[in-house]
Amino acid sequence: MSRRRALVRFRLYVADHTQNSAQAIANLTMLCQTCLPDRHEIEVVDVLREPKRALADGILMTPTLVRLSPLPVVRIIGTLSDPQPVLHALGLEPVAA
Image 1 (cartoon, rainbow, N blue to C red):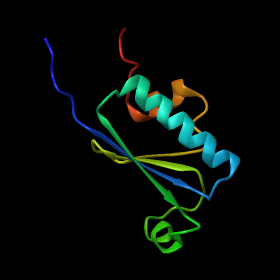
Image 2 (image 1 turned 30 degrees about the vertical axis):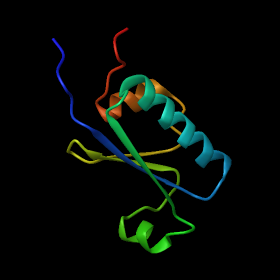
Image 3 (image 1 turned 135 degrees about the vertical axis):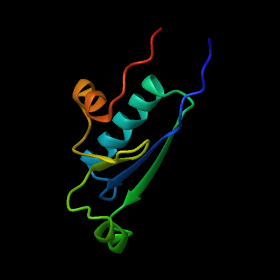
Image 4 (image 1 turned 45 degrees about the vertical axis):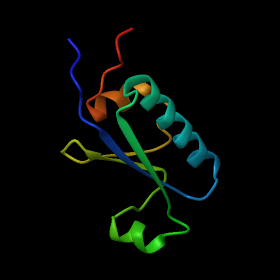
C-alpha cells in the first residue's frame, strides 16, 4: 500500500562558506536523500548575506537547522554530523530498504 507522506520543510541557517556550514549542508542533504526521498524541501539562508532575516528569525548561532513542517517547529544547532540524534530530534526514521 503506497501512501503519500507529507512534505518536510527545512530551513538551514549558515555563515557563508565556512567548514561547519558546508558540513551541515552536506549532512542534511544526505539525511534527506536517505530518509525523506522526494518529500523534502531545504532552504539555505546565509546569515552574512541576510543578517536582518536571521535576527528576525531568532538565529544566534550557525549552523542552525529549523524544521518548519510538519509542526511543531524543531531547531537543531550544529553540523548534523551524528545522524541518529538528529533523526530522533526531528522525529524521523530511516527509510526501510
